[in-house]
Length: 154
Image (cartoon, rainbow, N blue to C red; front, side, top):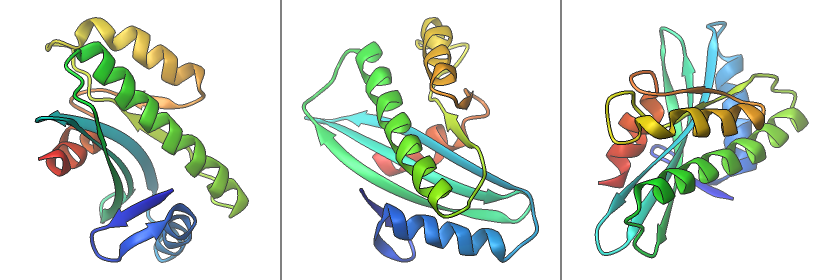
């Protein structure tokens, strides 16, 4: 898998993990590793999946991948696709992190909210993520999905 770093350009996921390892080792701050996706419709659907690493209290870095698909107008289908893409990256990332002795949990940020059109899907989507072995966050705590990924879909 290839990702884009805003500062370093196109990188393999393996290189992203090595960059993350160096970033973690440069500071003794607590670390949070997050993956989230969002999508935007035009004449097709643009999906953006983001990997963010945050030093709590010191900012962070992010990497992303963009995919274009045939137009998806069904909200449930879009949320399932976003979640599937997020989990796929999280699984690949976790495997490479383990190979490189980076022993941190990956948190999944889901673009779901208690007050919007996605409120009925919270239980089923968070249950799916939990069954896959990940903790999840929804709005307003899912900044990776509703802030970074959303910005990159525009």
